[in-house]
Image 1 (spheres, rainbow, N blue to C red):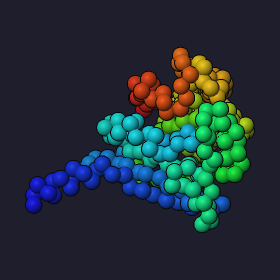
Image 2: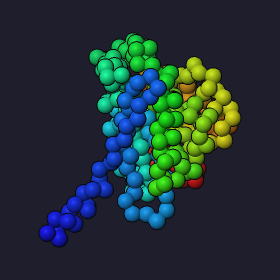
Image 3: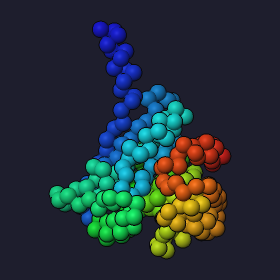
Image 4: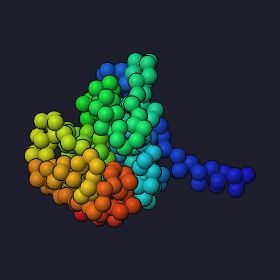
Length: 245
């Protein structure tokens, strides 16, 4: 019996708590919160927003290492993705791209269909929910996003003083709120992309870096996009987080 109880204690910390919230336009969003199981202090927290066509599982390798460093994580499925596909009781999900050549068309169609311009407010709603958890230290907030998720996290800096914002292959933003955030936020920002990114993310990263008060840009060789870059840049990410503390 004692061995069985010990096994349960070892297994429980491996599972995140699934959270839900409903947006003003009726989307039921899902997120997974994983907190350090044994700590005397409130934990720093990282909000992770995935790229177009993916879901929260794309961050699994990174979140595991964040947990090892005593950080809590909230990985969310953006509207229209993963489990976040029900709007007012009706399925409304993004259009899938069959190949890389269809990504732009699928993205543009999905943006209008699902309402990508509402994602920054969705992410703010998630942070408001986290504020209710006394086991989290919101003064030690970090934001990490890929492509669509990275673009959508930039305006969040208008509402939250994050320690750091890190983006992988962030898309181009047409929102004045993004420009306002970059030009006024004192949060440290890190924009990562490859030189030959197929969606032009290197140009976006350079522009973001120039506009940001505390902006740093890293341009890598190659043409990888989004979370595919994680094995190459994890060390840079953790170094940046350490410097932003």
